[in-house]
Length: 71
Image 1 (cartoon, rainbow, N blue to C red):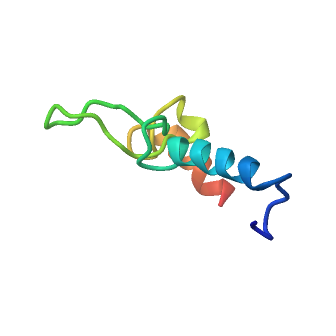
Image 2: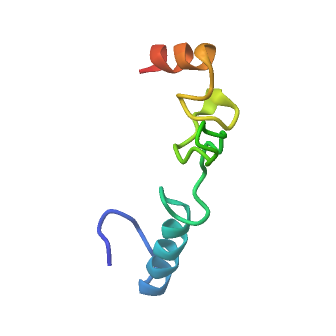
């Protein structure tokens, strides 16, 4: 059992890891930017909070400036 998290038992930890694998980057339920690129595919970057579902590249200059000052 992991020392970093407090799981009640091994089954609880397995269920957590299965759920985490679905939403982490590259997983089937991971959030993506989904802006249409010039090649016609969808952008796969992670959206930022200020971008209303878009990544830093596609959110626009106002959202980019807001993210820059937060760091």
